[in-house]
Amino acid sequence: MSEKLYIRGGNPLVGEVSVSGSKNSVLALIAATLLSDEPCRLENVPVIEDVRVMLEIVRYLGAGVDFDSKSGIVDIDPRTLDKTEVPQELSGRLRASYYFLGALYGARGEAKVGLPGGCSIGERKMDLHLMAFNRLGAQIDENDPTATAIKGIHCPGKINFDKKSVGATMNAMLAAAKIEGKTTITNIASEPHISDLGNFLRAMGAQVRDLGNGTMQIFGKKHLRGFCHSIIPDQIETGTLMIATAATRGEVRINNCIPEHMEALSAKLLEMGVSVTEDSSSIVVKMHEAHRAVNVFTREYPGFPTDLQQPISALLTRAKGKSEVTENIFNNRFGFLDEMRRMGARFSIYDNVAVIEGVDMLKGTYVKAQDLRGGAALVIAGLMAEGATTIENPHYIRRGYEGLEIKLKSLGADIYYGGGLDG
Ligand code: EPU
Image 1: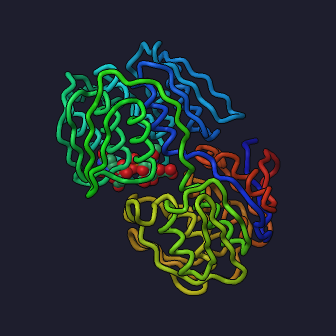
Image 2: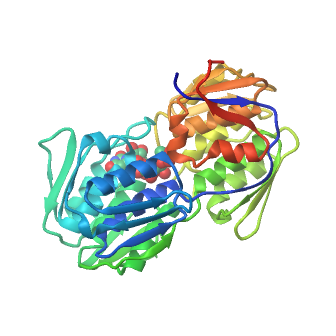
């Protein structure tokens, strides 16, 4: 019988918890280690399924990998890299496999990577990635519909993105870091993990300058050195824990986070009547009464992150009043609300806007996770609900949250994995 996540709702979360390393940062940095001529070490690596798959791909490519999951340290030795192709069977297991295009093109001048997988949260094109590689000398081979193949003679270039893309910005940075000369990238995305990658590449010897106004300049180097780097705390896990605390009317100190990365969410929670206080690396969230409805509008960083849209929407199903949530980044990120309808949530969806009518009570039932953050939203729903909630497909949650159930349990939640009977 497949594994499920069981929650008995109603317990307020109370205590202290520590945030793990950033998923979306570490996935790019694992690929970045292949650009180096020497071994690299990554610290504060979260033990999540997506990391395991990325490392499996690095091993497949011939590099040495040693992952100590207890200490969260990964050592990668790229000197034995002997392949430039990632088969679909591996690439299709996560979205971030697209970073092997930039890393292998930078390292070897060619890459063939099967189509990426990842959560079905809407259209996820690759045109901006390919345009960037093309500006850096790559020819795109479109003969194989199941893979992206690029090959060419490195040249620095000018890249302008018509639209901000996290993945395309980071892929362009990966390739440009090994290309001698000046590459200028304009209209870049500026999520926290982009700075983390910039710091890593800089420490390896590339010159990476953020010129402000969405412009980055990279002077690549033919030889990059090995480096030890600690991954930044996960912005989205921090936000998920903040929302879960407010949802259960609890009081939690969230440690090892970067409050500055959380400003859009903190402002929304304050608007809802939740108390949010912070010091340099902790946030304390307190809520002891019903929260107010607010409108949410997802935007690129520093706007409200699309990855927290689902968790905050879950919270808003119990707010006082009517909220409007507008999803501007991905066009299929409301599926979890249909699951929550069976728990008593009231809402209507008009294109990319969910109008949520807060209710006094949700009732636990059997729900199905369809993607990572939608899964986290269902966990929050289960924590708020009366009675028992069973979440099917919890493997989505494991892809991107390290020990979420262990952390929530340590704060007083009644939550556990099991393979037992439904309901
Ligand atoms: N887009 C294009 N063309 C492209 C690339 C993107 O039109 O070539 C569009 C997308 O369709 C989307 C928008 O640009 O509408 C933004 O997509 P982006 O490229 O920024 O997203 P991504 O790189 O596919 C990463 C994260 C996502 C996160 C988004 C936005 C990784 C592995 N994934 O995806 O994380 O939602 O940035 O911040 O870093 C998650 O963690 O749950 C997750 C989905």
